[in-house]
Length: 304
Image (tube, rainbow, N blue to C red; front, top):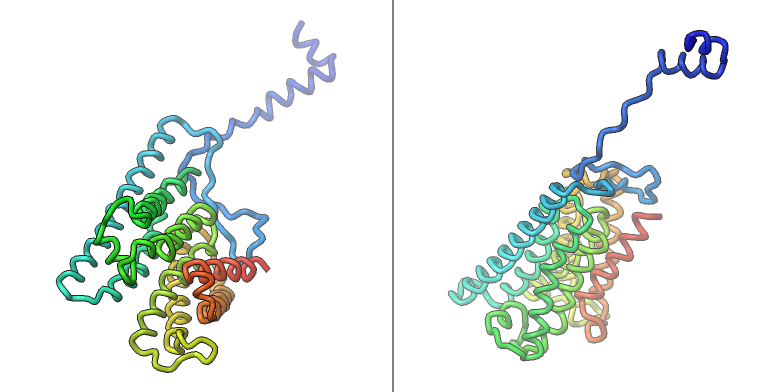
C-alpha cells in the first residue's frame, strides 16, 4: 500500500527519492573558543587584520579557562611591572645609574613590555579589560600619591623629575591612561595602538635621553628641543613600532604588505616627531600629544 502510494503520488515519490539518494548533511561541528584568527573579507585597511573569532555562547569550561588564563596573565604583568620598577630603583640607590636615566628607561620599557604581553591573554572579548586593569591600578596609585593621600618616596624617585607629588598627576598619569586606552580600543586587532605606544614609549623616551646627552644644537623654533633628540625619536620610534607590528604579524594577528607598511610607519614616525618638537609642551604634555598624533596619523595612513 505504501509502495503504491509512493509511485502514484508524485510529490511523495520525489521526497522518498531524495531521502534515499541524497541524505541530509550532518550538522556543523560546534565552534570552539580558541579558533585561529580569520581575515575579514570587508577590511577597510591596507593591512588585512586577523581578528580572533569567538563563539557566541561559550561552554562553561571554556569560559572558566579564559577567565583563569586572563587572571593569571594580569597577575604576571603586575608582578613584572613592579619587578621592573624595583630593579631600576635598586640600580639608582646603588648609584649604578642616574635617576633621570632610570626614569626614562622605565618610561620606555614599561609600555613596550605591556604591549608585547597582550598575546598571553585569551581570545575572549573580556581579555582586553583584564589587561587594562594593570594601567588602571597604576593610575589610581598615581592619583592617590599625587594628591598626597599617601607617601611613597620610591614612586616619586622612579617617575618624577623633581620629586614633587603633583607631577604624578600630569605626565605619568597621562602615560598610563594612554596605555589603557590603546589596550581597550585597539588591542591586538590593529597596528594603530602598537605604533602609538611605540612612539610614546620608545620614540619620546630615547629623544629625551639622547637630547639631554648630545643635544647641544637646538631646533630654531624650539630651544628646549634638539636636532639629536628629534632624530633619535624618529629612528627609535620607527624601529620599535616596526618591531612590535612585525611581532604581532608573526603571531598571526594580521598580515602585512611590508613594502607599504614600512613607508606608512615612517610617515607616522615623522608626524609624531614633528609634533614632539613643537613648542607646545606647556600647553599639552608629550604623553598626550605624541600618542594622539601617532594614532591619528596611523589611522588615516592605514585606512586611506
